[in-house]
Amino acid sequence: MRIAVIPGDGIGLEVIPAALRALALLTEEMGLDLDWEVFDWGARRWLAEGVGLPDGATGMLASQYRAILFGALGDQRIPDMAHGRAILLGLRTGLDLYVNYRPLFLPLATVDLYRENTQGLYAGVGGTVADVAADTCVYTRQAVERFVRYCLRDLSGRSRRRVTLVHKANAVPHTGRLWQQVFHAEVAAFPELTATEEYVDSFCYHLVRDPSRYEGVLTENLFGDIASDVGAALMGGLGFAASANLCPETGFGLFEPVHGSAPDIAGTGVANPHAAMMSAAMLLGHLGYRTAAGHLRACLREAAPAATTEEFTKTVLSMLRRRLKDNV
Ligand code: IPM
Ligand code: MN
Image (cartoon, rainbow, N blue to C red):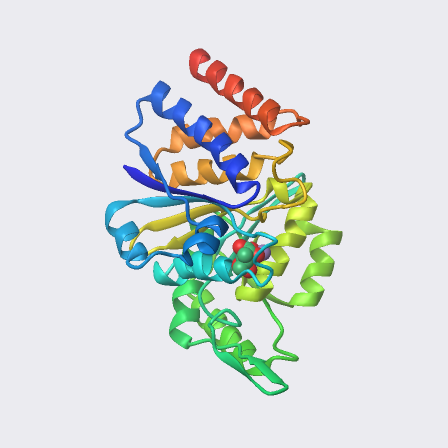
């Protein structure tokens, strides 16, 4: 099984190598059928050659690889992040990775947060004329339906009992109503799930005060982007938040830490590789390597915090070696 690795910019170039060391160890010790190729897409190529996502990249990835391990994009020389949109959003839409699963692992609760990943304000509908700028939030029923259906099935498979739709239908009524209609129509097929709704502002408030109110949370693209950073803060920082971008129909997945390229600390060796490693664990699980994924997750749960990327990576690697040797 081949995976494509895109470290990107900044600390992506530090945390992805750390995650690859964990993958290499597991591959070798457990005899996994796994190899990877690294692609240098990011700010350097964008600035030097004007290339973001090379022509034909999504087709090539879909046909030759099973999944992507992705780092982060962002560079101070490209302040509008044009390359970030071209590459990351290009991969999400080009590979139709419409489910963005961003679980929040908290001391008293795990919140399964699902973000729609292809439409809404990210649909690319808008423009600027003179002094008027518009970004339009667009949702099709088909996009909401397929997303909601997948999430409900997934939550049910995880034995979750409560599901909350997060929207802003009081102020943004058209897409808000579409989401409400689809959500209630679809959730009726899951009697084991108790459905509630929450406005996104109220949701952020309650999430911080008492995250145990929530089990499964479904939301649209921008709200999910924002809420996942709130969730990351609750986890202890962006360095702990991992994510999966999935196309359930093709089975393709892109796994990435929620954090960005962190130019303020890039190159200093102190980036937390936890989220990148956890994303790699999610990738292993997605490929069917559940035992390997479980080992890596367990080590990440138990590893003591460290001052540097190298120190934390070494800790996790030695814990992994010990687990494999003791055959736990
Ligand atoms: C994320 C990021 C991206 C997003 C940016 C880099 C376009 O913030 O993955 O959360 O908004 O989706
Ligand atoms: Mn974000």
